[in-house]
Image (tube, rainbow, N blue to C red; front, side, top):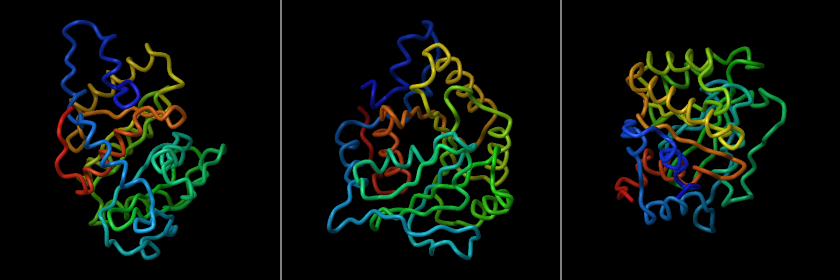
Length: 244
């Protein structure tokens, strides 16, 4: 349970009476988690593959499938998380660099006939010069976009550039969810502090953000199973998710 639901694992360390309703909005059972795994496991009749890269929308693949995109600051671990999501299909090439800002284009991955996943360039340090234009146009024009995953570093919490990204998503009316990355690098106390601060921010300052924060470690795979299930759910491929 601690690997699948790292957010709920933290509950035992909270003071009695702390409101944890936001911890439980998406709590699928084992059957739903197993069904979600199947979407991320390639086979002869279910091909998962990198499709193309684009710096402008007229270079992007046709919007034929439901789509999710991952955005965040440079070096927040976007590509590492996408590689972890696709770990059941190791032939899928997701390039991960030790150099912040390595992703300069929008990278599209097609998951069979079910959905497309997009790795967006990082903002902040070493962001591409045309980042704002590229991302804003994508968010406003991509009518098949079902959810944007905003990645936040679990060690440092929300930064000024993250607040700017939130403002952009709120202004455009884009439904999004926050994902706290690198949780294996943060002490339990620091992680709890960042989680509670971000949950309070989401509750009081946002309209389009999913109320539950997702915690992940691409190194230890904590939270990866749950995130796969949520992606399958928001793309309409797992419409009914029974609670555990």
